[in-house]
Image 1 (tube, rainbow, N blue to C red):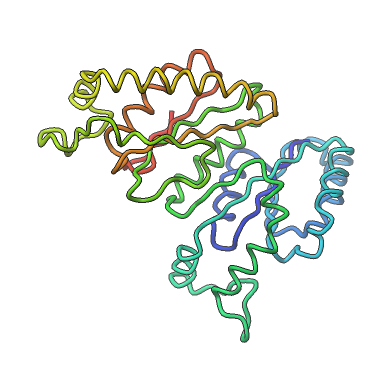
Image 2 (image 1 turned 135 degrees about the horizontal axis):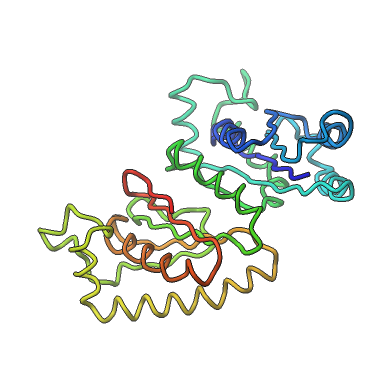
Length: 289
């Protein structure tokens, strides 16, 4: 049985993640106490539920007493033939405050004596064991619901691959680097098409921008060195049984240089490195490949 445990901070998007897994055919349960997880999987492994092989559950801070036995609980699942993987959703405190202000919902760790900010900080501490045990952490601070669904789908489908899924992500430093990236490269040293008036409103997907960048020797040098570096180190991620490797490439606005380089590297790695996906964080609409 394949089990995905969705956890994370309240307001980070766990419900969206669970709905995405449900759309993929997972049997989903929201807010399951961690202490009941072994009982659930045991019941699904026998009787009339033997056809259920993919299960997803969300676990939040209300399971904090049971989280003290997280390690032994995961060990029991493995001994029972359950492949359990954890994805942890996180977001910046200010972003969570904004989301709660917009929805007017009550945070699970707040009360009359505990303000929202303190509840968020306390929850971070409570969920540390799950965050540390997670195979992947996704920062949803600047994600749209669509982008989160794409990320969750990629995580789930990556579990079926023999090689790690290689995700190339473009971004703009003016909105901050993605916190869930495994490695980040800064491309702001490359020639910037933004300063060419006729290229400013285009992106790295457009042929005039591509021609501009490919006319520079330093762009080709950067691409070659990035390919060599990533190509060497991805093998080490194979060794440690990683199913997902996120390579983030950033420029100033996340529209020209980083988009071009992501497309180029993804094209070159697609034939040699197994599953490859693309995400352009600061382009609209988001592109998946």
